[in-house]
Image 1 (tube, helix red, strand yellow):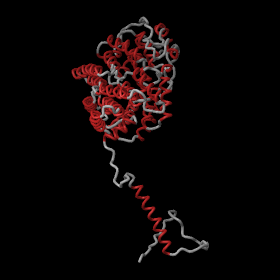
Image 2: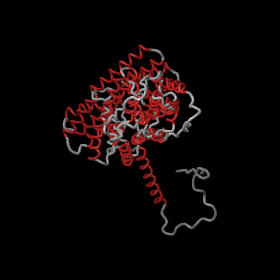
Image 3: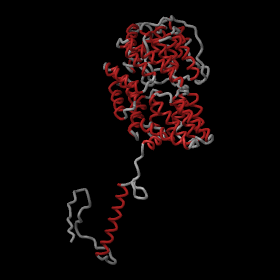
Image 4: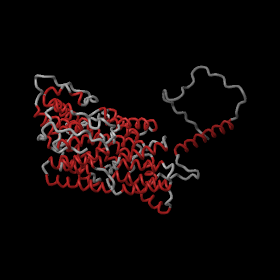
Length: 558
């Protein structure tokens, strides 16, 4: 005997009890109680079955539960979709595919996947020995299937970009896009290549195409980098925030959190950057770049012991030349000259190690030599790099090396190029502004020097443990602008402060000595295209070659 209990229905949560006269029941044959019970049972069975299918979506056709994807499957998915993979998953994928290919050497797709996995392993761990393995695997894939092999072309573009061989990355990436224009995975490498080659218009076109094909977290992270280079800091922060929120795996999210930390650091938000870096490490302990980021932020906060520990941990797990340079400069800042020299020696060792694996670390080496070694050697190194990769970062580094070697007239041309909107120099960089300000100071262009040194400290008052104090000293030495003559220009908004030499003609009136330098200060390579590789016209030095005391300080690595 069934007993039905009617439960009270809360107001607003279900149909109300009928009120007033009830409508007549529908005409037609009346169903028997047995028939009604059968219909109710059928409906209940359907509901139960539907609920089971919703709750158990992983049941296979035989009723057995589908296995959760293992590390190899997860890594294959990540590698194939252009997102970061966890290091243990990458290692499992590499072991699995190496074993598989020993038995199936004609599997072109597995060769391509293995090559991309090697590249990602090298990038994440700074183990440069994986790069030659990646090239061999990817070229084997192309040899097995020389036509219609977009996977191998994508992989070769990514490998070249990771090695900072931007001309090769452009060649392979454009070949991949031509073969499969609807595939999005070649565009991130192409964007890196165009940026490294100084072709900001091609960068913008490639980003538009990428976002037209893909709108997920990986594409948003690439967009954030481009926005940052364009000086659109709020857009960059919003894009990387969206990417981190939409990340599908912890390793993917950690990479995006580190990128958000870098953006916060560049705008001088120390606590926010530290929070992002810590969140990245907490999300994925193998995100070693975030450890170096913690070292950067902690040093600026005055927590030197913690900063040194963070840098040492990052360098132990990911021995990159940039980390060794930053750690050496922090040691120098706190007066540990011997420890600093050890790190500087390590910079050269790591650059040489990477070069043997086809990695181009000449930019870091040039910055290091300019500040801590041989400035003339830095100029030679960076002139070669400029011919290969005439991008904004190289323009800034070469200008600084020329200044450190005593050629301020030519140095200014490259410093202006690094901040020239017409050539893509819109990034809000405290380091670039500092370099330009010191060069202008030694050319006795007091107004522009004062403006750019102040701008460097306004962008990020802590941009370098050695150079931020030097910027303050130089600014104090310049003093207030003279009471007579043209007034200082008003402060510009974030995206409009750099207009090249023509935008500074009013300030040059502060000193007659600036006129000669201003007249010859055209941007390098303006007679040709950004990718022409021209180092710019060689101009005779028109100002004293003596670096000022603050200018002799080392610069922060990029």
